[in-house]
Length: 53
Image (cartoon, rainbow, N blue to C red; front, side):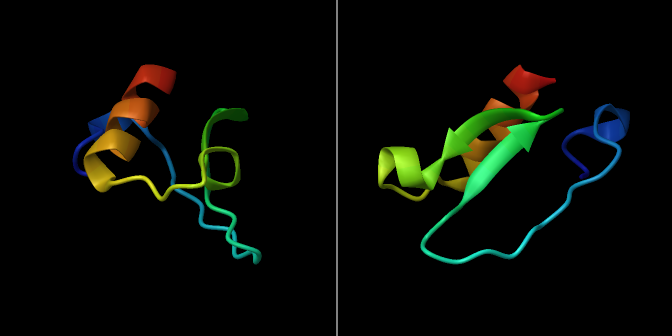
């Protein structure tokens, strides 16, 4: 949250199963582990969120 300042109002974590890890910004999917087969590193996740803002 510190990296985004007032651009991000909230971050919501929703538990799931089956290896799912997805990042959405304002309802738009910006990353899916199921689609890529790989887990994303923190810096890349932050970059994708910033692009989606």
